[in-house]
Amino acid sequence: MKTRIIFSILFLCTISGIKAQDIDYARFLVKNLSSAEMKGRGYVDDGDKNAARFLASQMSKYELIPLSRKYLQEYEFSINSFPGKMNVWAGLKKIKPGADYLMALSSKGISSTFAIKRLLNDSLSDSEDFNQLKTQNLSNTIIITDKYHKNFADTNLLNAAGYVYVKDSSSHLIWKASNGKKLKDYYLLDIRKHFVDSIKSITLDFENKFLKDYKAYNVAGMVKGSMYPDSFFVFTAHFDHLGMMGEETMFPGASDNASGTAMMLDLARHFSSPANQPEISIVFIATSGEEAGLMGAEYFAEHPLIPLKKIKFLINLDMVGSGSEGITLVNGDQFPKAFQLMTKINADNEFIRQVQSRGESCNSDHCPFYKKGVPAIFIYSRGSESKHYHNIDDTTENLPLTEYNDIFRLLVQFVKKY
Image (cartoon, rainbow, N blue to C red):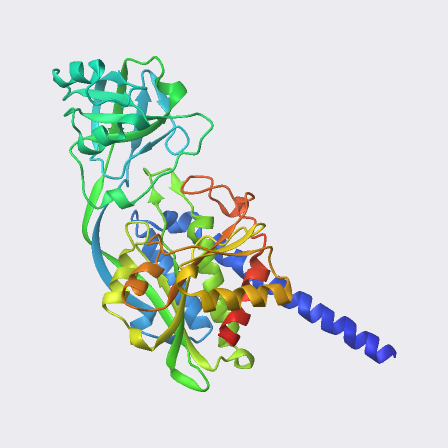
């Protein structure tokens, strides 16, 4: 009896240790990917390349089979960057990048002061205010406007020096990189409303560096299947993020998407163990350039390192750092058998609150593969406990990983039963 009790305690401790090891490894990965050394995994000081080399070292550590030299698939695209000074004055007040304002990545560097005009709370393109502005020379003027006039700013209908979108002081400032593939001849900024309510000028003093044919890397490795080595189950996750807005302001990207990258690598670690070797080969692809427009996934789908026709199923992991409300399967409606299987596994094991299905959407790295005919879904977690997105507060400390272990177990079971 005593022996049985001791065995039970040891068994429970072992299970507990495995659980802790999963999330501890994930936190290790997220911490490294979100560190200052990675520069937000963007295009300043080779932040994305530092991340790629780190991921390759992890794949090597667990002896994944490289799909290309040193796990790295090289490709190129052009992107703007802000590697130097980043200064904005609203009137006489210097405001903080990332916290008080965002500079669109399509902007060229400059050092100049601009007069301002206002075009607010009026959605009519033939309004009196708009018609008056059309008659003026606005080449040294920045227009302060709002959501009603976003189309004017996007096409610069007023031929202004630039546009400021007024943002409510309580809302998150959300930056993006997808508009940085081409430079505009005018400036776009988001600035919190209270900084621009009564100012008469705006001063811009910042630097840019347009990176033509910038070299980037996908990182890919494989665990060989014991019975069907030439058939593939694929996990993808993009590891890039937004990088730096100036030399001092970093966007860490812990949730988006260090969390998905960490889970993908944790799955690679799990299946690389001889005790967990899968029957089908499993490929793990860490893509870059997603924030710039699915660049890495597009390149891999056009230049595959495995036959796309041999991929039985693909799961893309993007933002899985919460989970109190469950997970959503984008493209779940397109693959009802996969959705039903995942729902059944979850119900049988009571892993997470809900598995929800959505229709197709080209909003992450599953899309280029799906367009090529690969059965592919995109999984993200849901929960108000993880609220930071594309801002400077998406940090390791703010990432809860609420249901990390249970989502991980759900995916392991899904691979085994699919």
